[in-house]
Image 1 (cartoon, rainbow, N blue to C red):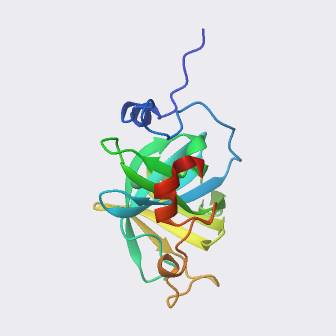
Image 2: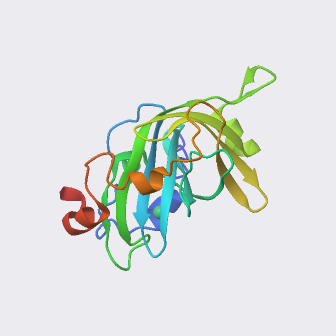
Image 3: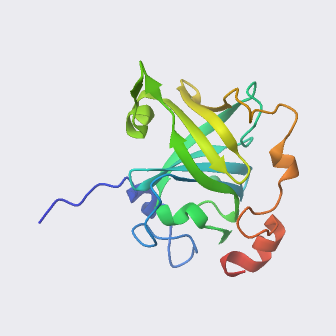
Length: 197
Ligand code: MN
């Protein structure tokens, strides 16, 4: 029998009680597109935004306390968190009290991304970029667009908008885009309706 492939999703499963949380189990749901991404607004004990990039069959994840910015001068701390299953890419709903991440999850942005990382004109895979602590991706979201760098520092990862035509220091998307990019619902509506609404 072939050895079970390690997906890196054991931590995800260990943190959750699937008889209580509506979040998807690892290993179920549709296959990914190969290059999807999502940013989920997560009203937990502390409001934050979770960035997830599809890499090699899982969603590599970071919690961004202050959310993404379109201003290249803003360096936003991005705390690496456990891999999430691909099915999480369109999860929106309520994680019940007492469960890990209890609160409301909204799909704030979603779309596809392209790995832009090259070194001396040689493409660098996402897996390699994660190991090296330096990713550059081009996001094609409903809201976030253009190049973004994720750089690992001794104090954590930083998410930084690259200076391209989509960079905009005057627009704060976190203030102007307040409803779900997927369902159009507010955080309050998702909180009332859960994942079924
Ligand atoms: Mn979160």
